[in-house]
Length: 390
Image (cartoon, rainbow, N blue to C red; front, side):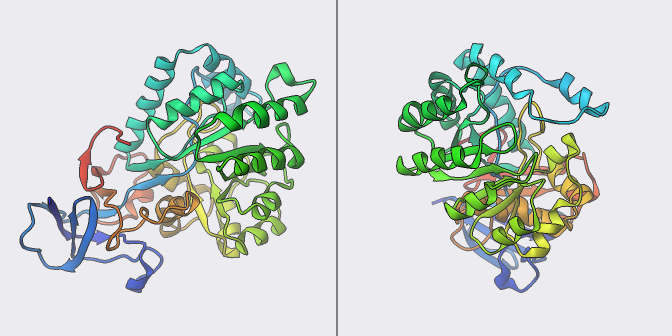
């Protein structure tokens, strides 16, 4: 058995409320012992009998970020679309079709290389768990190969064949819904099933059919809802016991109350709000209502082309009304809840040692010093990493 001790930790974020030190369970001047990939001990002083000691004087140790919403299987570039929004053009999600066209003609090797590049970016900014969706193929072949590629990198794969209605089905969207249900869902190895239930995408009735088909084939439900307009997506998510409802920019007070009274996590996407200018101060509405909140990168080439969870934390604080503590909690423990994971998102005895060591005395610096790379080192199952590992 191999063991490592992180000693003299200036600030330890545990997300373990049993420490009675706020939502983050922050501790100071302690050591953490990792053995065979798991947290074995949290204590004062320097432990003896370990194989390796890492002096964390002046530094912060926290759980690796859990990014529960990303779209990494794609090809192409939509920087011109971003520039147009910067000049005042309204976001409508219409650019997805351009990515679909580029993705369909890309090779497996090109899609795999692009995903790996983005995942390497993510891990170097502190992300240790990442969900990956399909959704830029919108044919049976392209959706299934997207899930197969995503599965090379994570177990948290999500079938989003119902992202938008592809152009060839514009005049008959119900036929595409049937294709998803009859030809794509039964052959997918994805863990999760997702639908973009919103204006210009899929109705609540269509979304329910697809989600129920996924559930019948052993997938777990989650949903894109209320990004562009208020609708019935949140109501559907709660009724089906979805793990997460995501975006939520245009949610009503009734939607927020439903989420707060349910086990469905409200996943907010600061990068998308930064890019699309849809809704400011969004986080306070959910947090003050008592909803369980996650934040995620929503990494995609159109509305949130970032893999940086520290950027999302800083943006959640500056734009969405989060406190720093709330944002860090949402990026770690909240993300784990959105994936229904209990082994990550905390530093507690028996949890997996997915850890992030910051060259800063406090987690506050994640928002206090936006855009600055504060990552000292990243650990997955207790081993230092510099490139993505499943």
